[in-house]
Image (cartoon, rainbow, N blue to C red; front, side, top):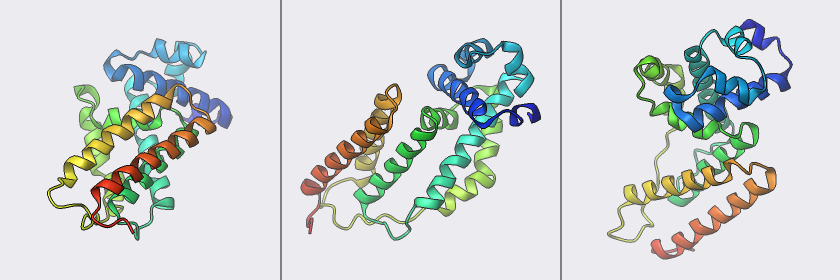
Length: 204
């Protein structure tokens, strides 16, 4: 990949974004070098020249997005934030910030972590259990659920918000500009506050 890294930064970003878009949209098996080349407006030969194979490109992007996500979390995550709703908002805000840099990064990494194709699955598991996985584990902090009303299953509530956030991210994926992302962030925050009002015993 030495030749790829010699390209101008804007050219690298253009090719990375094209590959992320194609893989996020089609998954590993259905995506092709031709699709990526068309999306990046370069020849198939150049994609192969830069990355060697579809597998190499996919694994490179998985590590690239994983490291970018952890870097963002390490620089912005506050260990003092333990409130259930505040942690959800912070995690979503971090993902939205990544989308400003690479539109399909979050969607791609989520799909890569759940990829079942035998050609790349083992490699991805090794990546996630290695240094990248250890960095992620170090960022895990306890969540304060003491304010939730009795009888509320916090694990189901968290899953609901994860699904909601994923839907939000997909919705703005094709309209990725700073204003759309900021509006999405504000709307999601308003929804969280609404749930907080009804699900906390004390909102003061």
